[in-house]
Image (tube, rainbow, N blue to C red; front, side, top):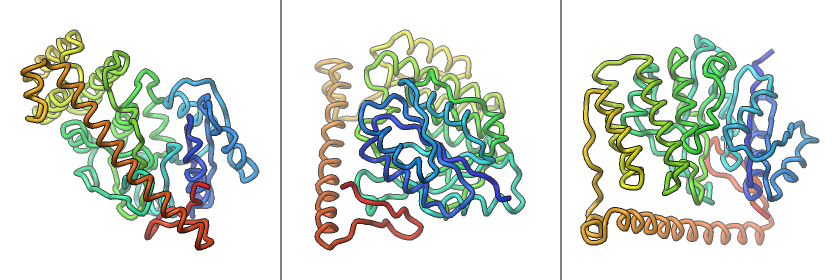
Length: 356
């Protein structure tokens, strides 16, 4: 029998996009698959939409709202797959994404080989997806992958991975204490227990840029504390593999980049980060602002400068999203007038129904 792949989808208030996500899972050319959705106490129509697909073999479970990490852990506890495909409720897979990754496993790859793939980002229009390669887009040893990821603050989105059950068991559950960056911390553990990462550029997936990212720290005390915990875990994970000058520099670069998230609102966390830097054999410099905000800091102080930066970025994001939504709606009107209800991206891309 070919390996069974479990496609696991945590969902919370995802009524706008979950149907597209389910369709991209069902359209996988890899035939031996199961699709499991865990609704994390949604207050909209997410659960009702998901339940429409039970007749097509999709399994739907529910729980009270506990967060994405807890929903993923529940989904994994139900599944039976030899391989795990994590898929957030607003992201998409190219139809042959899983098949292309498993084609490598049929060769000389072991069950401890971890598979990654190319991923692109979009907002509303999948036709405008952008693929931006990073230094993680290649075959890497565990230590090389973690040095690049932590030192340069790079990401490999959740749906880009394909993980064997052996690696999933060895890595342990998702950490529900992390309110953001839980995927980065989780896959550091998966990489840590792997033999290495195999990158398959032909296997593609699509990351929808949300209006507000779970990884955004902002001014929430709980998110700041959770982010600091994630940073501590990053340092512990990589140093458990090696503890040389290269590793310590990567950790120090990571701490320096994130210092501004806590300064000046949380001097207690800043002090702990400075001590962690000393333990790594280095020191942190006071965070700096770009010229656009530095003059505000000099006149009105750090907090005013950070508030201005946050509001500017929010307005800029809103304008970009509004324009993309306007163009998306225009395209939908044209499709409706032409009598077609389906849209495609490009080669090896998902074929999904447009929002009605």
